[in-house]
Length: 210
Image (cartoon, rainbow, N blue to C red):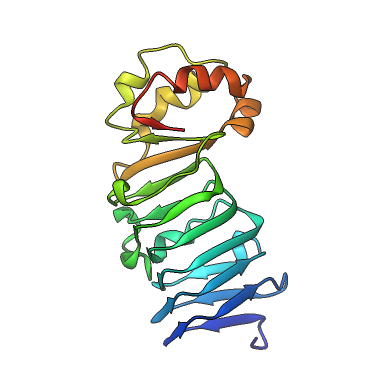
């Protein structure tokens, strides 16, 4: 850690290591010119203390020990064959062209990644082949091609305010959005319904994984 409280991982390749990013006073910068292969990263810091700058992660495992909220920095990481565990909410992954003017974000990518051991709440995946990804099962549920399927999804009545707030606005997501995942219990609380009522509608569509 430098005297400003920054921990830097840059201009190197790290393989078969376990990194614990857990210091509440530190800012962690991964990249530029960082490649990590077959590593485990234990994350227990807030989103504002974790930065990716074009880092490449290959066959790595991310163990999120503290809910990671609204973390857009995944868009500046290239993720291939990675596995995610833990709670993530409001996070974006993959390649979002509108971010390309920012340092590191031109490297954003996701492929062959596994979220089945994660809890995703209001998380999006951009600019990728979603057929290479594995999403968490119920009580999470994932809209595939939410923009393209929006008219179909609006054709039925959704419980609570989920239809008015979420489904009626699917077309407003960035055009790069390929998948959108919600966690039923938290969505039910927020949109004044129940997980059971949500599932009854989710089950009607082949464009929703659950």
